[in-house]
Amino acid sequence: MLVGVLALQGAFREHIEKLEACGARGREVRKPRELEGVEALIIPGGESTAIGRLMVEFSLLEPIRRRGEQGMPIWGTCAGMVLLAKDIIDSQQTRLSLMDMKVRRNAFGRQVDSFETDLSIPPLGSEPFRGVFIRAPYAEEVGPGVEVLAAVDGKIVAARQGKLLATAFHPELTGDLRFHQYFLKNAQ
Ligand code: GLN
Image 1: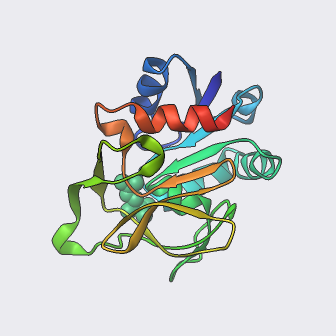
Image 2: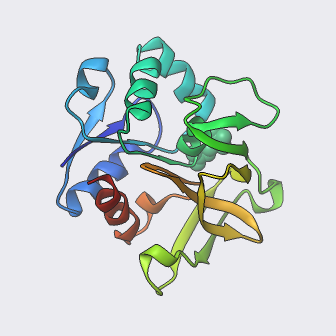
Image 3: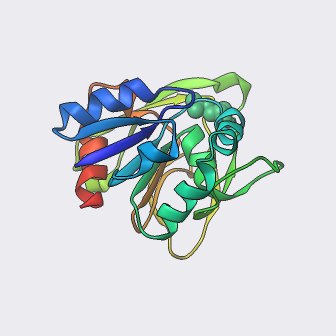
């Protein structure tokens, strides 16, 4: 499977490496032409305001939104989760508005700006998954079509809506391929 990784800013190389370790092909996407032919897309972590602005500048916002509405699987990690959301608390920033959830940016507060914790994610099996959180968002609310996959202290940090997937943490920064495998399996 050919999977695009939006490569405008942020941690895109790590995602490509993980995809290739899973046996998929990864392609950096910076132009609308590079989006054509990809069967799924990852939006990496980084700075959601910058990535949003660059998506407009590089004429990718509308094509990605359209593909998402047509059912292309998209997974957003951290900033990518923010960009997938319909609602971003206290922000008017550019977004794809594809997932029915309300997110709060930098939501864990200054004391725990970045942290790691073991997560229980039932579809990945009983082994805990190491969650790496870097100025992470969480979802305060999700719509009825959204399945919650993981939470930290009751705060939603992984969710799925059909072929759309959002994680507040960074599986690409761990040695664990299970989340990438889960995305690929779901994308088929
Ligand atoms: N705080 C960033 C944002 O809201 C996300 C950080 C990240 O992707 N690691 O855009």
